[in-house]
Every structure is written in C-alpha cells, then in structure tokens.
Length: 156
Image (tube, rainbow, N blue to C red):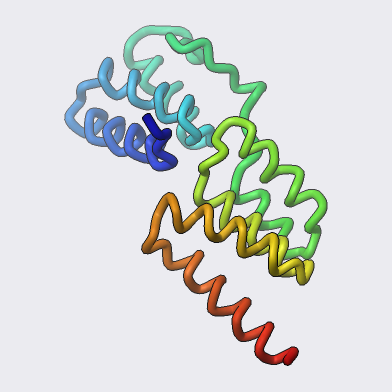
C-alpha cells in the first residue's frame, strides 16, 4: 500500500462536510485524522477545539494522542523563507515535514525550488521526478522542469 500525500486534505474535506451537516462526532474524528495526516495547522486545531467545546469535552481533547506542542512546521513557513532567500532554514523545515510525510508533494516541490535557487539542477530534477511519479500531471513540477530547461539552454 502506498501512502497518499493527499490523505490529510481528504480527511479535512470530510471533516468540513460533517461539520456543516452538524455531525460533530464524525467531524471531530476526521479533524483528528486530518491533523495526524499532515494538516497540522492552527486553523484545523481551532476547529477541533471548537467541536470539543460543542461536545462538552476539554478543548484539547483528542482520541489520537495528538500534541499541539509537536505541531509540524508548515509549508507556508517554508515558502515564506524561500521568498526571503533563506534557503537553509527553509530546507530545515522541509526536511522536518519529510520526516512525517516523505511524499508530501507541496514540500517536494518547494524542496526542488530550493535546489533550483542554488543552481543545483540535477538534484532538483531528481526531486521533481519523485513528484511526477506520485502525480504525473502536477503542474508545479512540470513548470519547474520547463524553468530548468530554459536556464540550462540560456547557459549553453
């Protein structure tokens, strides 16, 4: 069985659907699984806390032994660092994300961008190929390949 890098997003979508249908127990379960599968973000925790209050549970109650203190660094933070050209710290965050989900497509694409910015095109292509193996039509990866081709052609 292959881990699906979109499972956290799928759980989050189900949680939102259950929440709108006022199926709070089901929504709670799916928010917990969304967090466990990579959607470990403040807004998801806040929704879980809100449901816990509606269910008369402690705000931080969860059945999966999740810990907010261990909240994963976010793709958003890594991208902020990339935009500031702080590639060393962006790479640290991306590596932490890979520890919990080595097939995180967003993190892989960002990691490829780090290597592109460092002119390490060969390693960037290896990462991009991994993305394409997971998602053959991933537009970010395909655009990154085009960018690398343009850069290499302009050097020659």
